[in-house]
Image 1: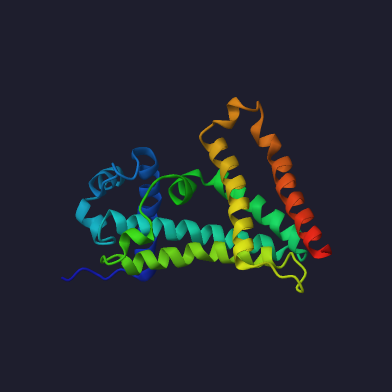
Image 2: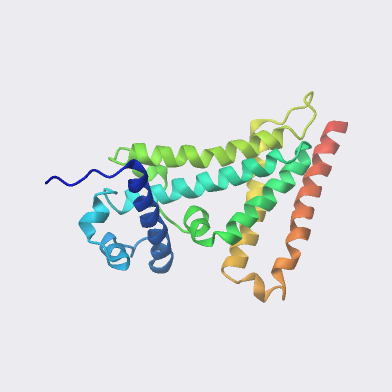
Length: 219
C-alpha cells in the first residue's frame, strides 16, 4: 500500500520543528561544525528524513535566516503602526529591534553577528534563488527603516539616499553594539545593570537624530 501523502500543514509543522532544532544546534556547534547528521541524531530522525525536507545544510540555514528576518520585519511593522509621528516611529523601531535581538539571541547571532555565508556566496549556485528570497526578506527591514528616516525631514529638503543610509548604519551600529554586548555579556563588565540603561541609550540616539533633522529643516 503506498504511503499516504502528508498534508501541507503537516509538512510545514515538521519543517518548523527542524528549523527550531537546527537553530539551537547551530548556536551550540557553530555554523561550520553543524551537520545534518548531527541534527538528525538530536531529533531522533534519520539523515535521509532531514534531506527529504532540505537539500543540504545551506538550504536549511537560508530558511532559518528567512524565518528570522520575516519575524523581525513583522515585529517592526507592527510597532511602527502604533505611532504616527516619524520620530516616535524611529525610536519605537529601534526599541523593537533591540527587543528582538535580546529575546531571540539564537536567531540574532546567525542573522547579524556571526561570519556566515551571505547572498553573494550563493550566486551561480543551485541555491541562488533560495538565497535571493532570504535577501529580499532581509531588505524589507532595511527599506522600512529608510522609509521612516526619510519621513523625518521637511519634504522641501529631502534626505539623499546616501544620507538616509548613513543614519541607517548609525542606528544599526548603536543598536547592534548594545545587543551584542548584552548577549555576549561584555557590557556586564562595563555596567552592573546593563539592561537598565537601554532607555537612555535609545533616548540618546533618537534625540540626537531629531535635533539634527530639525536643524536641517531650519537651514
